[in-house]
Image (cartoon, rainbow, N blue to C red; front, side, top):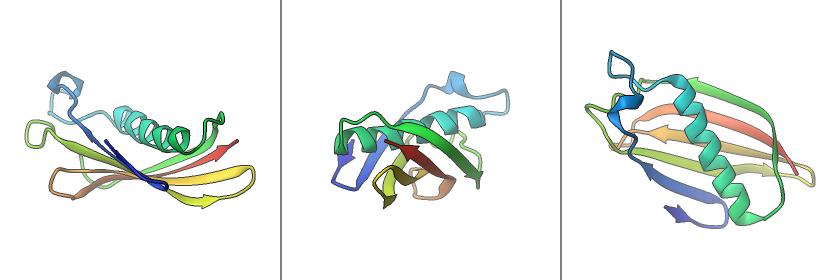
Length: 108
C-alpha cells in the first residue's frame, strides 16, 4: 500500500474462489474494492466520519484472476469542499489496463 496526501495505491490479490464459473470476478467485489480504496484514502487524510452519498462504476473489462492475480486499486481526491468530497478510483490489471473506473461522493 502506498499513500500520499491525495492518492492511495493498493495491490489486491483476491483468492480464485471469488470468481464465478467463467473465472470472472463478480461486479459487487469491484464495488467493494473501490469503496475500500476510497475510504482508506479519506481516513488517512482526516479521521472524520465520511458518509457515502453516491457511488458510480463503469466496467471496462472483466477481472479474470486466473490470468491476472494482482489487481491494482487506486483512489485520488477529485474535489474537496467544506462538506462534500468527490473521490475517483479505479481497478487496474497488473499491466495497467483499466478494468473498472469509479467515482464516489462523500459527506463529512
